[in-house]
Amino acid sequence: MTPLLQKLIHSFQFLPGIGEKTAQRFVHHIFGHQKHLAQGFAETLLEAIEKIKHCQRCQNLSEDDLCQICASSERDESILCIVEHPSNVSIFESTQSYDGKYFVLHGVLSPINGVGPQDLGIGKLDILLKQHPIKEVLIATSSKVEGEATAYYLYEYLNDKVAKITRPAHGLPIGGSLDYIDGQTLTRALRGRQEMVD
Amino acid sequence: MTPLLQKLIHSFQFLPGIGEKTAQRFVHHIFGHQKHLAQGFAETLLEAIEKIKHCQRCQNLSEDDLCQICASSERDESILCIVEHPSNVSIFESTQSYDGKYFVLHGVLSPINGVGPQDLGIGKLDILLKQHPIKEVLIATSSKVEGEATAYYLYEYLNDKVAKITRPAHGLPIGGSLDYIDGQTLTRALRGRQEMVD
Ligand SMILES: [Zn+2]
Ligand SMILES: [Zn+2]
Image (cartoon, rainbow over all chains, first blue to last red; front, top):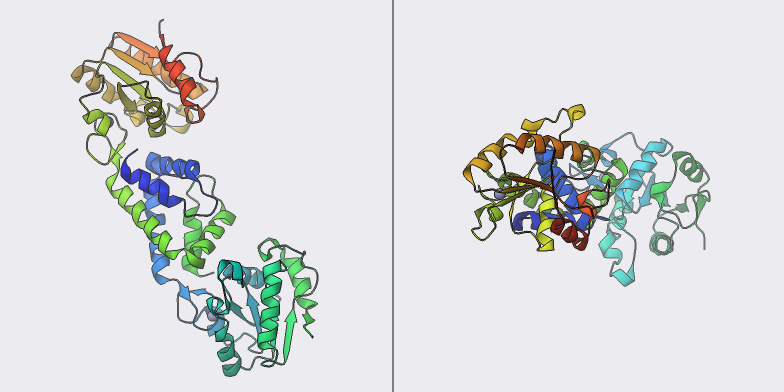
């Protein structure tokens, strides 16, 4: 095991769930027969790191200043859906039952981890609400404790700035992550969404 | 999900055991908060792909033409241990009970997968035996079916070229991979190694 391979095994472990044994297995796989594929992978990763940025309007991952959804003139400008992660946008899109716009927080409020409103870009929502004819904000953070707390923070923050604030209907499993919900359940939860009131 | 991110998710899946869901999780992790670590990782991977080659003598992974073990004058030149994978060398070294040289096959004979003697560099063993004062070849392929078949092929191939051919002693679990053996078991198996005879 050369110093360079040891460094590579160490650096593989930034990936979630990857420990030393798995990293070793990856390295032996690569230098067994897969150098060519590994090179293509590493080059694609560097290209993505260079080109992928946050959409200036909605913060979703994008290769351009504005993502395809924000740039589209065919989406309903009157409704804005706030989600935790880019993967949530993919799931909403796959249901084909939502044609509004999005705002991606890239996380939830978490005082214990030092994540505050400014880390999630919540200040940008002000500008969005002033510049676009948004009539409804649908807060689709998860129903976990921190997701709920973030939803209520957003509700307080947005309450006097927009006509209607909603949460997806019951139908989402309590305590679950949005990543593991089937499209049908999510479609029902969207159709039955409830207005948030004091 | 942009085309570039889709390409990245696809290209992650060359790693063993990584499917689409896990690749998506890796990508969301990277573009959530880990771009900096991901960049260091990708650069280390490209550096390793460029610099890591097979040692000209033993085929083990090396940053130089000759690996550190082949280049060392303090190792016993009279014994050569043939292993399947670079990881096997690491395990042998960790026991500190072997101070000879190695030869790394990077696989086993597998007619069904089109892996023949030339793919494992077995022809190079001829040159090694002529150029170095090797008195014993210790064939440490695994005790799985293909490892055993490779050991017997090597035995037939080397029988008239070297004084003594051995296999590690019983003590290795039957049917197991060398990667999961503790050092103590391997030390015992090395001390009790048996000469192969017709
Ligand atoms: Zn956008
Ligand atoms: Zn070597």
